[in-house]
Image 1 (cartoon, rainbow, N blue to C red):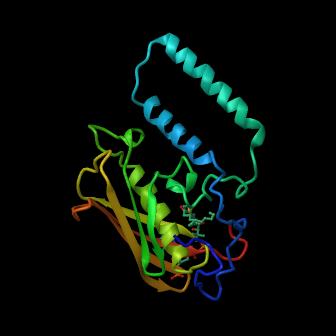
Image 2 (cartoon, rainbow, N blue to C red; image 1 turned 180 degrees about the horizontal axis):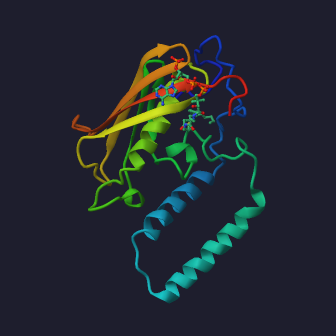
Image 3 (cartoon, helix red, strand yellow; image 1 turned 90 degrees about the horizontal axis):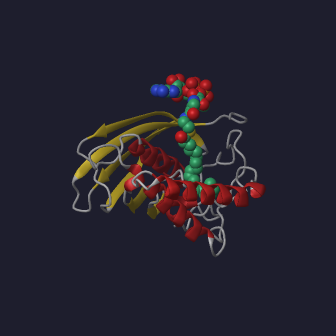
Length: 215
Ligand SMILES: CCCCCCCC/C=C\CCCCCCCC(=O)SCCNC(=O)CCNC(=O)[C@H](O)C(C)(C)COP(=O)(O)OP(=O)(O)OC[C@H]1O[C@@H](n2cnc3c(N)ncnc32)[C@H](O)[C@@H]1OP(=O)(O)O
């Protein structure tokens, strides 16, 4: 996967990143234990929304969670200086906010990512929550815009068509591309499918290049 490297082909005005801080991928993916920590925390998230332990177990879990928070709290760092979101070799770039998906293709012609929605992402009746699909598409559209060499852009609008119930714990594919560029505007689209091509959802969005200094 090629992300924000010196070799990525870019538009001439690429360096105008609005007011964004300068980010760089973390080549170490947060070091030898970070991926393990993120996966353990994801499993805790899955269990936190799907278990009904007795009060004494909840009390024990609360104590351990509070102890973990106290362990990490002294190490807060400025945006762009922690591995979460920059560990491009980890599912969801090592960010708990992102879906734990793996980028398989990342170039000017588009981005493809594969993964599953987990228990944590459930809405109702065993299906993925409607709100996590825009999250998946929005992050994909950010990557597509980036992979196409466009300057840092923000989402102007994002439209999702929910075509079919999105299952949990089922390998899925999301793939999208730039459809059209018009000045600062990048029109992008993507499809979420099962491996056999069954369409679950599709989306289109407008990504707008930030002006110098724009937040
Ligand atoms: C990381 C480390 C290394 C590893 C890297 C791994 C890969 C990384 C990949 C990726 C990186 C991540 C990159 C970030 C991605 C983030 C994505 C988001 O979710 S952003 C959050 C949600 N979006 C907002 O919060 C925007 C809020 N809105 C705004 O800030 C403004 O509206 C803004 C800047 C988007 C535009 O405002 P104006 O005043 O500059 O521009 P105006 O004139 O309004 O619009 C420009 C053109 O766009 C049209 N336009 C604007 N909004 C529209 C809309 N909603 N519908 C239709 N047209 C719209 C306008 O009509 C105008 O068009 P005409 O030039 O006249 O043709």
